[in-house]
Image: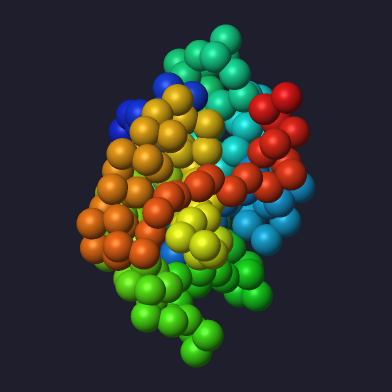
Length: 195
């Protein structure tokens, strides 16, 4: 097994490509070790000193390090070893009862505008964001404002506001005139980490 790495726009996140499927569908974000109970792979990666968060995609794993002072050259060998060791065990990446959420799956409650927003997120926006080792989750649309949660390398990326406003907002406004703005939604753990 040969694991490759790919830089992301976030200097504190690195994308690891194991050359095999990581998740059959969707993505999963683990902001800390407490969140990793459903993923043997994420639990193994959190044992590495300096790992702050783990993000799983279809064919990649994005690791975010705890701080700027920790160097990738120190963390990378342990991450490589953990990924290679894990995939030789044959264990599932996530437990069967814990599958990725389908936040953009069509719902009977969706009106035409929300359906179009979800479609654009799935077909145009997510693939681009996932190329950079992250993801964007739909969290709602109200009063012209689309609420999105950034994950993976996007969570603490210095250019995440530019991604939201210049990239995502502009595209959504072009195709869906009802969209006035795009806002980032953060959970309590992310808010606490920024203090």
